[in-house]
Image (cartoon, rainbow, N blue to C red; front, side, top):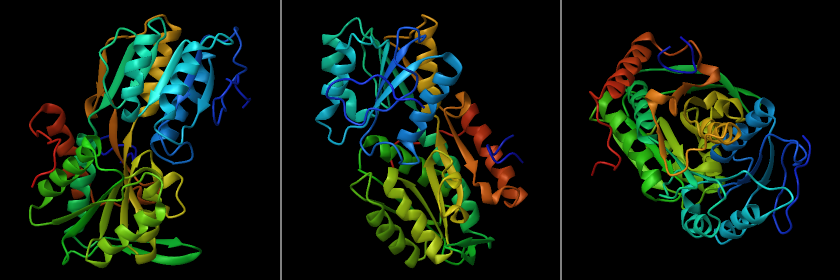
Length: 358
């Protein structure tokens, strides 16, 4: 069983006023293209959404000989300024401005109109404009898969021998409790899709399982994430899934301290967390693929302006990935059931909701 699925340097050109400007290449005219990256709030180092976008542009730098510059806004009010500074730059000209996150939609509506000759890409929302390529994901489908996994494990005795903070530890489930949890960052329609898919997947395994849900109100508050998840574990949850950005690091800490399990999001978080033995799986959202593909389209003069590219399970836009410490440990009846539910979603036999069930 391949754990990846259940089935099978240098400083970039500076722009005056841009904050946190990093990047690859030299930003010169010899590059195949220049890309300006405007990240979501929370910035790089979140080991999730922004870092996945960053890995996509790094791949483009390596494979496509492009140059890029990074900006990390700290306030929503900065999105419009950063977008327009990239779009108005002439040294270098930016062939693509990548707007990472739905919160950039409002600012982009203005800038796409003001700079009609500038190519933009938008992740997690759609804008009907000839110079904007929109990329959305069916997060609810991947969340269904990890919810199904949580339900299957929560109703059976399962344990994993690992470590945390230098000490040996057993990470286990309690089939008597039949409780799991979901921790979101800020409550909005996008994150409710994660919650909806997760709850539906849990119910697909066993409709008697209780799902506790809560929102932290922040993308960058691990302490709050730890507090919320800790209360869920203490109330009987043995697995908690987060869709909360860097706040989710606290979920992992709470799980590891109690010898329980957690599910990561956006990237394979078992590869980067100190609490990797607590992370049984992650719902990977391939923002990296969206960034790479948009950049490649620009390089090939095939930019898909005016389109919405929706990526789900069948287009490898989202996937459930077994944690690196759990490779080969999940019971075959669990992985077989997950393979069946994935196929059913792809075939249209399971219709995954986008709003949580009441």
